[in-house]
Image (cartoon, rainbow, N blue to C red; front, side):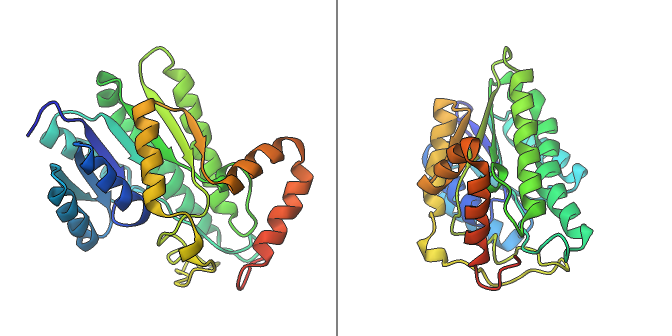
Length: 269
């Protein structure tokens, strides 16, 4: 092991943005720690990272479980002795109106998207502080503007943003870097496994995935955010327009967002 190499932990690393991010950091000589629930997929990503020249290990982790998050951090320290970057990417979505949705669905989203970030960050924090490291949160435009039919998803991303922003201010003089990245719709598995009103996976994406931002683009933005120690970045022109217009014309943006979501196949609104 090259002790000079930096160590990155990536949650939700078995597919989509997490998988692409693993390859991006592997190409940049990082030691890579993969975390997700699917061992077969983790093994495939690990193999590719090793082919790219990286030291790479994986751990089966459900970030909704506090003990699993703690074990992930301990596992990393046992193997590499340090943590330079934590990328909180594990995420779960939903597609149902609040009127129809079971509350368990919203609890699941908060447990993965919010508490998963909090728990992994809490246990990694002492080691990140030693290295003047980076904590990155993969948010969403849905964390900047509430999306109908995704109340739990938007709430969890808003909560994650607030947590990370507060943590940044708390550590202004510590050397810790906190970055929040808000991609727009990105081609990934997240919509296929999004939960419906009863908590079952919807299985079919309502969007044309081939026309969406590709995960490799998001991965490059994450790498840049870490290298330049950027605090906040919104991707896609649509996302930037929503973010800025909402500050001044929120009622109009409400109507625009509603109209856009209502045109989805089998829209929940």
